[in-house]
Image (cartoon, rainbow, N blue to C red):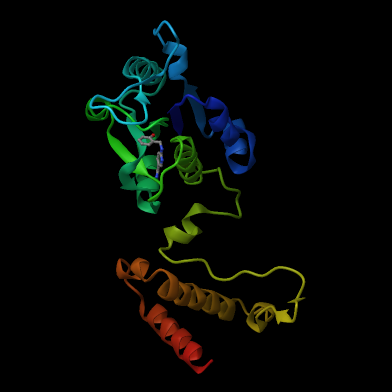
Amino acid sequence: MYFGVITLFPEMIDAVTKFGVTRRACENGLIKVDCINPRDYTEDKFGNVDDKPYGGGPGMLMQVQPLRDALRVARSQAPKDTKVVCMSPQGVQLNHSLVTDIHSWGSVILIAGRYEGIDERVLQKEVDLEVSVGDYVLSGGELPAMCIIDAVSRMVPGVLGDLRNAKEDTFALGLLHFPQYTRPETIDGLKVPEVLMSGDHERIRRWRLMQSLGRTYERRPDLLENRELSKEELQLLKTYLEQRNMN
Ligand code: 4GM
């Protein structure tokens, strides 16, 4: 999976190549991350990479010429027909389905803007999709771009270990994760649920599925609206709610 990133702060993006699962993915050649810095393409006599908005007002925009030159270089280094995504609060919100779409493209160029944003015509002409990581404003698109790189990398076969599998991640199943416990058996009087100590794998599977369904119903009912429940799942959710109403 190829990621080209247009950024004024490539050292931020370097973090994905330095830590954890994404570091291993880079080392094993399963993903490649290239940064292209508009600063390297400035032709302004003061080396500026920002510019004033027409119509006035506070704040600056990304200067068009260095941005477009960086994008031209990024396209030349990427596989042909690589799609271009711009991180922006005005974008469609990132979710599991969009992460699988981006993975299916095989390569992507991510524009991580700074300042107050990007000239609308550059978006029209050069950008295939604007993507947001949520309804809040950040000081730049780098953290959102890193969210995409991390989430998409987990879809690449071999990136997660043999024992972990992206297909079993929370949103792949359309449900929230069940509660998890590790040692010690008791913390401040709170015990690990008895079923998890039983060694009965079928009972454990049903309990975990019931917890996932119950939590999703309570915390993210919107996720259940877009998901058919099997007969077993409906029964488990009913049991969860009955038990809850008794306590
Ligand atoms: C405006 C336009 C993305 C702001 C382009 C980017 C939040 C998100 C920026 C930009 C951002 C988000 C930079 N802030 N919610 N700031 O995904 O690149």
